[in-house]
Amino acid sequence: MSTQPQFVASSIEDLVASLARAGRVAGRVLARLTPPEKERALKLAAAALRRASATVLAANARDVAAAEANGLTSAMIDRLRLDEKRLEGIAAAIDDVAVLADPVGAVIDEQARPNGMVLQRVRIPIGLIGIIYESRPNVTADAAALCVRSGNAVLLRGGSEAVHSNRAIHAALVEGLVEGGVPAEAVQLMPTQDRAAVGAMLTAAGLIDMIVPRGGKSLVARVQAEARVPVLAHLDGINHTYVHHDAEPAMASAIVRNAKLRRTGICGAMETLLIDATYPDPHGLVEPLLAEGCVLRGDARAQAIDPRIAPASNEDWDTEYLDAILSVAVVDGLDDALAHIARHSSAHTDAIVAADQAVADRFLTEVDSAIVMHNASSQFADGGEFGLGAEIGIATGRLHARGPVALEGLTTYKWLVRGSGQIRP
Image 1 (spheres, one colour):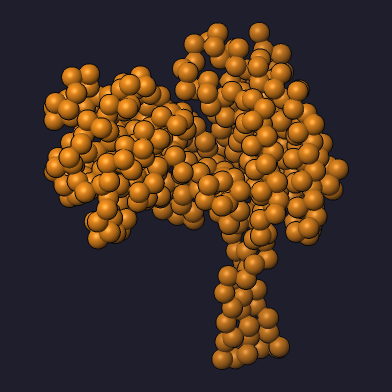
Image 2 (image 1 turned 90 degrees about the vertical axis):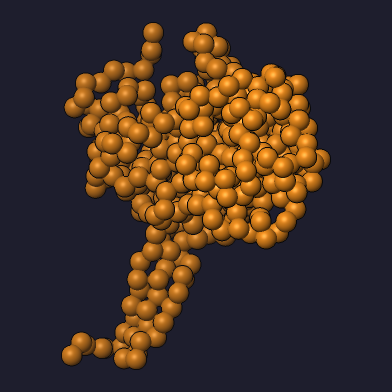
């Protein structure tokens, strides 16, 4: 039985409003901190997380045990599980964010008008950001670090699967941040797992400035349907890798294996493999996957490559498996590959393996996804790998930010106008 306090709907709404107001006040304090002060606070937060390693891992063990008892998939448990190496990676990501260039106050552009006024567009924090996420406890730390560095207060609402991990990580981070002069209310974790809290966050217009959902289709669909607050959507990763007929076989095989099997439960994992009909060694692409236990589902021509490939249904081409399952299709050249991707991609990450630079350039130009790759594994679709320190998520929409959303994506801008007595005639 849950030990979390229970609230009626009105109490949940009051709770969210109270947390949001406190966050907005803390955000004003955060906005006054200098870049060196924010850097120091984040490094202290990373140090506090390392000191709390035993506590965090014990809390995570409770979450993993519950997940196993509840029958979560192996991929979901992998996303949830922490060990010393992963926890150090989380702390290191905070350190990385701490030393990134502070976007706040950066001048985007400047112009002098004929009347002598000088106009600037300057980056500023968005304000109070609400982040609703599932399963992955690293999001607690990544989101906190990115929001603090970009001058935003944040209200976190993690999934029930990681509740103990999230609370332990949050407590450690706040200890370090407070030591560094950041108000505790600048990084708040929702104290209840009641699903009504999500609805209250989504309708807190005027208190929460932006919502970022990180999770499966059902979560994102609910957020988009109910939100009265602007949403920066992180959608599913139905990611493709197209192997062109002139791809170097050893490179293609290595990229395909890594893109699918390095970690199957992350949003950058390949979910569909497209093989050119004239590629000389299709068996060399599928055999390593089958040998490692990956389930392959393909069209008729893909099935002809290896009898172990099961028939694919229409739904398979539009499924984010997040598991050791892969859809495989044989396509008639670049145009056919582009058409398949246009029909089925979620606009997250799509890749081509090809030696012909002209073919690769056309793929990079015509595929309309947030991330498009040439001769690289889609598993690199990650803010840390992009040199951003960490990420809030990978945005697949067309407004404000696309791809890994980090510091710059968590800012907006305002106009500064400097005059010398000008009046408009």
